[in-house]
Length: 195
Image (tube, rainbow, N blue to C red; front, side, top):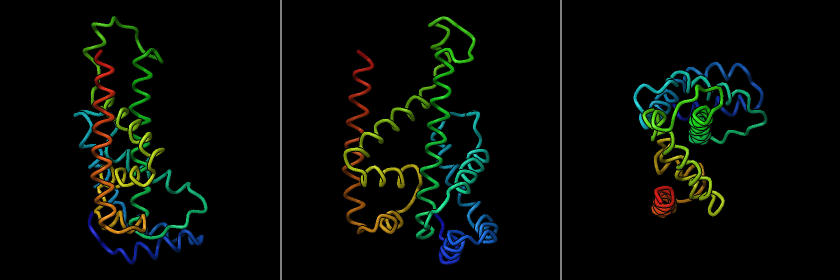
């Protein structure tokens, strides 16, 4: 992630946390393009022609960020870590909603053979990854946060270390172990579904 004006962003975040609403306008101008890059990173993992567009994802995430009350923003990395988490939630909710609709919620009823033509493996993969990441978060919250910030948020090892207040070596160790755990979890889930 680019480091355009990190000190200025941190100052505006602190001012906004302290109730300065004018800081939000300046913050918006500084972070919007970075949020678009983050959203584009997320959307690159989605299927082509996804109905949720990058701008809509950015706008929804920003609206949710503005609604947060009493947040004490630490710095730019903390802001983008929270933004990454919100974008992940928005996409997972969107994928789950699509899955719900496929199961009959406000949907046209079709036969099983017709339905297989319209399945969306990437949305299913996103939901499976979210479930595995949530399970990891219950076992080891920090490893879950590392994955979320690195994979979904595109934050650097240094930025993740800064947010979590740990060393870069700890982040790298957590990243490696979490990837192995998640791959094993997803493989186990895929094997049980294919039986």
